[in-house]
Amino acid sequence: MKKILLALTLSAATLALAAEPLGMVIDVQGNASLNAGGKTSKLDMLSYLNAQSEIQLSPGASMTVTWYAGAKELKFAGPARLRVEPGGIKVMQGGAAQERSVADEKVAATKKLPPRLGQAAISMRGLKPMTPEQEA
Image 1 (cartoon, rainbow, N blue to C red):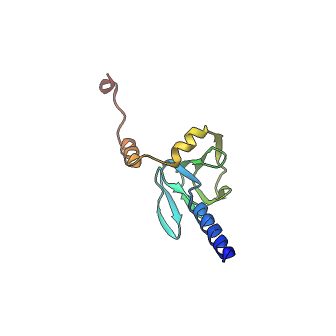
Image 2: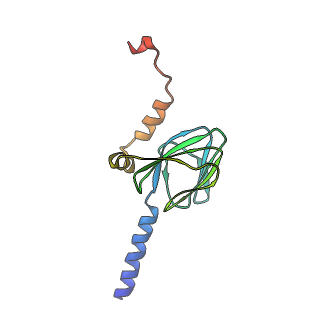
């Protein structure tokens, strides 16, 4: 009985880790799609990335990802086809990512977002830049 309980506990812990996001899209420009669990949708800014997801970037599109393991920022340019794996984002087609290290605080900030931050960020991106007269 103890072995069964131990096995169930370990299985539950493994499933919880598998569901944990590996990174977050912090910027996306142009046409990009995300296939997660057999469901394809538009790739949006502030989307979490989980293992086995696939990303398609159209020609001219780009995306920037905060990758939690190793505190990295990865920039990809389309056309590209990418697969999210526990060890990183694998480039199936297209060019390699531009990579840079980021502060642990920046990575931690993307792991748990305040409520409605996504809506605010998307709304702000839709605003036109202020003119010099408006800034004064």
